[in-house]
Image (cartoon, rainbow, N blue to C red; front, side):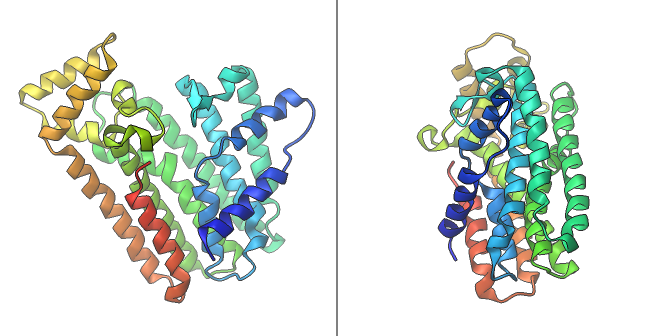
Length: 324
């Protein structure tokens, strides 16, 4: 099997899937956001996980799609909360239509995710729904923490890690364990799959934070320095605040973080220079690597043949070394 085979199968299913027809104003935004693409990481992880045990992985396609639909539901609502104008380079749903439409269409997406999960075999359905409900609540907890952190001044790096674990990583963990559940894997293997996914998610998000500051703008696909401009309390910023205590850079950081009006480019360059002075990038890369290493260790423990694990290993390496 190859990534291409999984992705082609997923894309075909998404192209042929309908979420509803009338009123069109309710369903068009769903088709729109789902057509914007994205990496499809989560359903890919579900299919690859299932294929560790299940030869006929195609039977898992619909439940795998549920994870992606739920992910995009959270993005639609996050965009409203963040008042974001763009998603993947295109107008967000609340900008293209309006806020009320985006809220309601997002609600229908959550229903659609449950409907797709309903394609799981009956013997697995209760377990799948129980785990999905827990994950969905945790994602909301993570989003709330993210909003709380925007107003707090005493956020620590470990607080940030817990927030991204909930907001981002638990869904990757669920995506992988879903594949294991539907492939009738044993409980230990399902638990290991969750551990792999959560750690991949943590490493992925930390890398995303690094790329936001240091990526090649042409490869990154979105504005470099966006987190700095928005004063987002990323691991890098929190590490810089910690290391700058008692130095001239502490006052510089405080000044830029408190400014309401500023030149965006100047702010990004100034704070990036502070990061460089205190070697924040190296710290963040080392932190990300710890989670990718934990994912690799858990993958090693999975009781399946090495050739079965090869594609997942390659996928994890691509996540670790990505440039966009």
